[in-house]
Amino acid sequence: MNTTTFMDETEARAEICRVGRSLFERGYVHATAGNISVRLADGFLITPTDACLGNLQPERLARLDAQGQQLSGDRASKTIQLHRRIYAADEQARCVIHTHSTHLVACSLRADPLNSDMAELLPPITPYFVMKVGHVPHIAYHRPGAPEAAEAVAQAISRYAVTGTPIRAVMLARLGPNVWHDSPASAMAVLEELEETAKLHLLAPAAPLGDEQIDELRRVFGAYW
Image 1 (cartoon, rainbow, N blue to C red):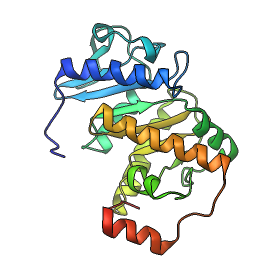
Image 2 (cartoon, one colour; image 1 turned 180 degrees about the horizontal axis):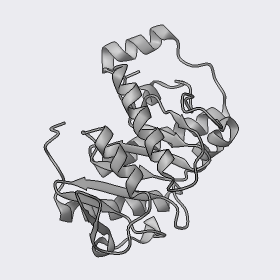
Image 3 (cartoon, one colour; image 1 turned 45 degrees about the vertical axis):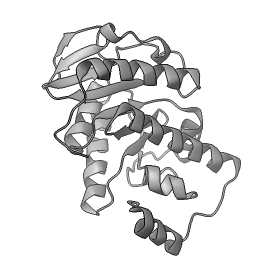
Image 4 (spheres, helix red, strand yellow; image 1 turned 30 degrees about the vertical axis):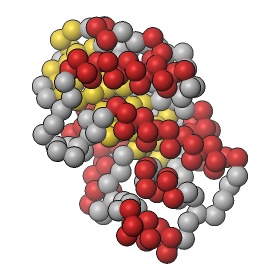
């Protein structure tokens, strides 16, 4: 992806609303849980605090400048600080989606690391999880909006980048995933694959793919694992 390319603001507003409605209608989010942001050339758009993703209005999305100060729209979600840390840690990220997706939260409740951010949420049980999602660090529990969570996520992104296995998702313990990619549509696709993998893991626990199988996915498809 060309890292200098940003979405047009009008297009970004429409895409946030489209993706939010799609996620809500298919049960990836409920009530007023979840949020979506897009990084623009000169700032950010993010869904308002306590907004239902199924009923977003383009003109009411929160518009922020490059320093995170709100310029217009309804009051920005408190998660903007976490989103900004993700954008700062991964220069290719253009959209961040956070949900409370049921199967992912269920997996988190089973694992629930109390003091460690080194654990991963899911084993590599399917090839598409390896190719489309990759490693998913399970971030120890912090209250919603806590700056400690944002710091832990930024550290996880940096830690994996150093090993040559960049990540595009983390799981906040007991809360839900944050996923990111170069567009809202691409970020939604990551979320969909991640939630489906969590569902499979709960329904039919299986041995992970072996080293040889993962190496083949690296060679043939360029998977980061």
